[in-house]
Length: 185
Image 1 (tube, rainbow, N blue to C red):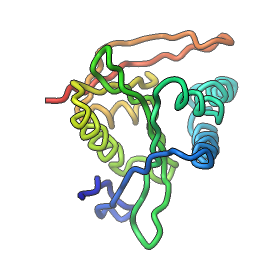
Image 2: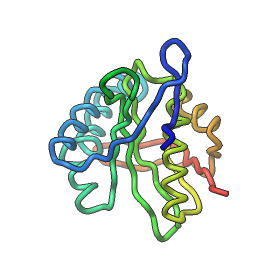
Image 3: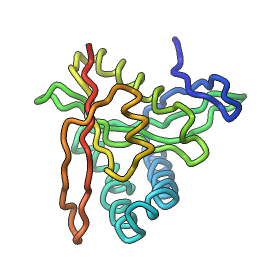
C-alpha cells in the first residue's frame, strides 16, 4: 500500500505512516510526547500558565484515556519510515461525529524538527482516506487564530475557514480558534 509522503531535511520525499495507539503503554508514550511538544511550542503563543492548564486538561494521560474510553476518540502516532527503524515524529487523533457526518480532527502535533516539511499533507491524505472509508462528507478541525504556520498549512491542503469561536475552557482561559473544514468530493 502507498505511504503518504512528506519531505526529509534534504527536501527529498519522506515516507510517513500512521500507527494506531491501542495499548496503555502507547497511551503513556503519547502523553509524554504531548507534554514535550506542547511545552516546546505553545508557551510563546499562549503563555506557560495556559499551556500547563491545557496539557493537563486535554493532552495528559488521564485526558487521553478518557477520550478513548468514553468519547470515541482514536489516536495515531505519525511515523517517519525512513531508515532501518521507523521513528515516532508526532501524533494525531479525533473522532467521527455521526450527527454531522464529519470527522473532527482534534490533534495534529509534530516534533519541532519535523514541522514545515509537508507532513500536514500526509496527515490530510490519511484523514481523507479514513473519511472515505467511513462514508463521511467532510473533516474539520480547530486552529488557534495566532497559529499562522498551521493555518497556512491547512489552507494549502484545501481546508477553508467556516467559523471563528472563543471557548471558555475554565480557570479564566479561552481558546480563540478558527474552525476549518475540508469537504470531501
